[in-house]
Length: 361
Image (tube, rainbow, N blue to C red; front, top):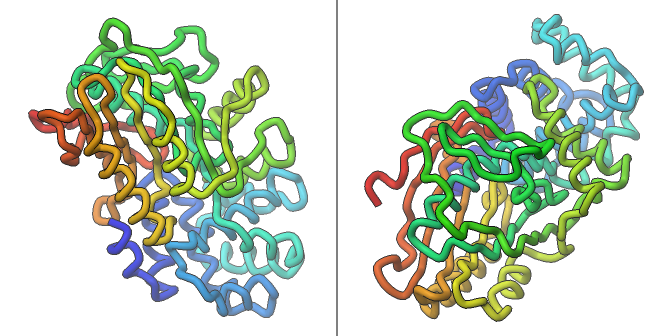
């Protein structure tokens, strides 16, 4: 998957891939702003020159989304609200949007430039629908109690999924009174209902630069990365901020491979499934980090047993369909030996989930 995306590294082709990705996932205004970066790249601004001389890879580094985050931040802070009409679909002419984005860079160059220093952190709660469905599937095949750990957790929004209320087709799970309600359009059969004893006993995450949701400035930065023309997403961020104010998620400032190593080195309770999960982050990891995590999970899987199973849930991008695949691996010392099972396809922000159910697995 990552290799296919990384092949799109001519700037114009990469920019168009990112724009079409936004269009196909319900954010046409964001797509127009992304396309405007071609003109910004040629502008006489520090932001444009840095884009033109970018030393990394356009898509792997999420370069377009770094800039669009900065542009959205101008609207959220009130520094300049002219893009509001673009986000609302009131301005659709590409030439007009190109000109506006270049004007904004001229006026706010010093504010936009730092947004290129770090990758976006989009931390979308809607993605937890697929992860929870995967846990319900696992709970019927492994131990129903879970110790979960998430890599690339960002602000830890999905590291609070045990506090979300889910309706996944006809299946409901989680505290019914939660302010975070995850109810995607469900396609296909419903995932299995939670079995007796289903519980999440431990839940933690890691990120290289975790965001503190209790910090208003940091929370606003997180909001800036949300596509403004994608309905419901900002409301979910607000709900996550409220949940974090009640009890902050546990997010360590660590490299993903070191965190996985740390979690797997911890004693595993009998009757508990230890499970790694992540969403829309694998493609951004260096190949060496991917290889280290894969090797460590394989090694730990070889030691897994029915009493102490190991699982790996990954919701990651399919560059051909612009959707995301939920793939689950389970090691239990017996029948399940870590073979990947595709359980679902999903909208990148959780608007819909198509349940495949492992196709008989």
